[in-house]
Image (cartoon, rainbow, N blue to C red; front, side, top):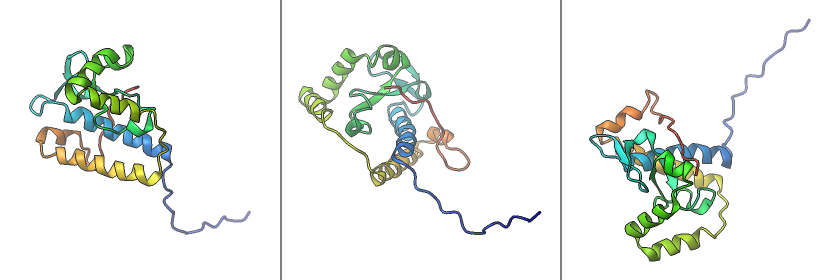
Length: 166
């Protein structure tokens, strides 16, 4: 029986697909939205639609225009902390979310956002890689607030927190 010889070529790192990058970016972006909206001392965030207060890890990143609308999927003005009750069980609690959006950004901006949602966006790998780099940096910038440091692992990777289903 012959021994098999192994080729000692270096392994080439394969680039990630759009789908893989979107999945990774969803996690990072969700953490950023929820942490940004939380109180720095208590780590408590508030659902923008019902007002319930919960630890940021128990909230979700709820999209006003659903995340299937690619062009708004990672738009910070379209995504805010929501409890699972509003985001999932009440399908975004749309009426209250609209009131929040009008109070926060104005009725004209809400109309612009709704028009933007009608456009079609196909993500490119380099666009998602750039956004991933940007939101990892934004999360690390929040590390200046010492409470946030607890979500970084020893490898410096970000922990995986629950995602919204919107």
